Length: 118
Image 1 (tube, helix red, strand yellow):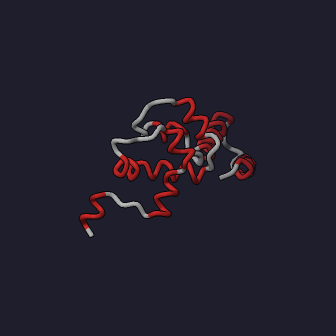
Image 2: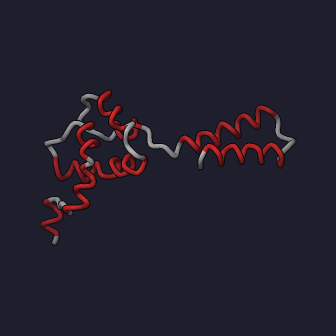
């Protein structure tokens, strides 16, 4: 949901539900705003999953330059990355800057477990 859509929904609620009090409207609008914000992937979602807690500020700066799709892909790929590269884990900022999850798609990297189950 975009902010423009949110504005239209707010206007619609005011027109169709005139019986709602100001505090009730405020609560509804707050919850709708949370829905809009939840469409974004916060850096903390990534950071709590990343095992190497070094250079957080630099990692967050890199995070802010990424698209929402890359943010979601980066988080989703963390478990696979850890299986493949443990114990040699990159700094978070390098992981994001290098877009490691894209390399894995291209080269179809496999873990040792994958090799033994084939």
